[in-house]
Length: 255
Image 1 (cartoon, helix red, strand yellow):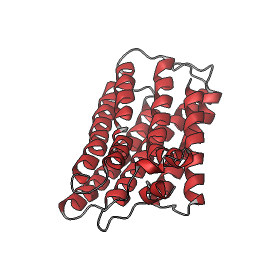
Image 2: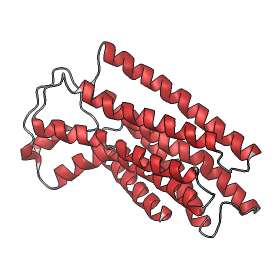
Image 3: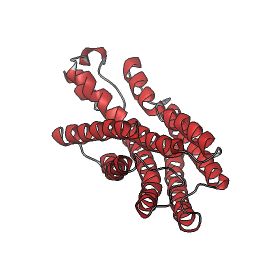
Image 4: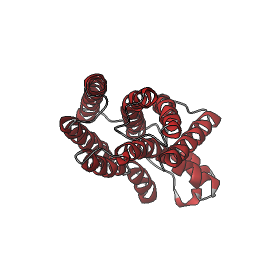
């Protein structure tokens, strides 16, 4: 199951990056997506190597796998969130107070990411990668907080932007998909509070893969609209000084 989710996530991201390169619109959100992809490949390899490994198995190779995935999981997750946030900045071009909110969000994401990685290194060093309850609580709080921000910010930003209804729904739904990460997070946390089992690792893999898929949605939806020749549902937009990169709505209308 874990390898399947990672395979889909990797394929989606490769398609996303290839498309962005083809249309010559690679930007910072694509760099973060590429970094997330690199760590997701590590997770994918670990999932293949870890098929017969249980959480309590004290084997050197298993411990190495736990070390790798413990560090790779938060890297995939937070780099994907960074990609989503960069996409939001480029699409909505926030100004004034909203721009300060976005900068504050960036700083909070960096702090939470560094804290989570440091925490993972600590528990792998002193708890043999066995997840104690305080780690599960920390992950649950940071994940819900960060994903709630990624859902709320687009709703605030797009209130001032004049877009055709179809375009606005398309963009908002793509950003709101971040809530899927929270759904998997809640399930993962519930398993973490229970007895050790292989389900902890499997759901962790699913969580990482889903986060990568979510950060690709905006680009993939745009590509799907162009490939299906559905550009006629999007009329010309009048968005002032906005610059669209991740979702090229002018390209949607051009086809």
